Image 1 (cartoon, rainbow, N blue to C red):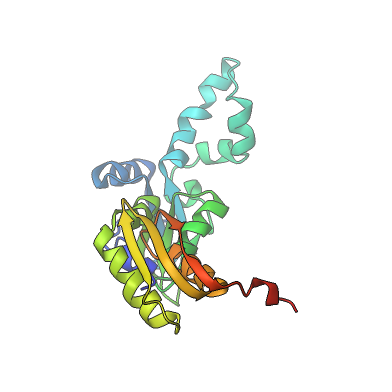
Image 2: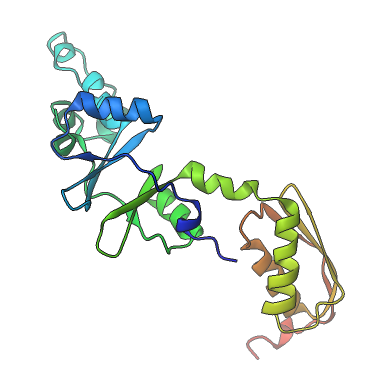
Length: 226
């Protein structure tokens, strides 16, 4: 079963408007125990995201320190070239990162994780086809996938992959799972089929690693490309 963003996202999402004042944004983050909040327009279209880091620009780039000869670390200035501009912001529209990085609720959890990694963000706004906010998915939500029980993982590997997906004889394959690590043992007819079984198992939600101890009767790898 492919886990989607809809399966793991948070649906009760706090949001702010573009004209929401700085202190009200801070209160929303603190009271909700969250690190970022989406900014929406009157029709719930997501127009940006404000994070704790955006608010902290006021301290990092405070003008009074400049008058005293203070400069934020070079690393901070290079990482956030618009830092001083955001530090002067008083509303969500002035503080937010825009456009917000978003994802569809139907997208796979794996694709959401890859998007977070490639864009170096900790959370994604989840939007419907019209761009309206329906949820938030965070790194923490995705990490929950790895809390899936060993028995559930083993059942999916046996039922969905070995018995249904491969369309070959897998009756001599055994599956053991411990702490999310799947061990495939036994034998299959062809080496290529054993490789496919291992690769498909690696894609199962909650799998930490796959130990491939499968053997085969026929090495068909030499036929590839012939």
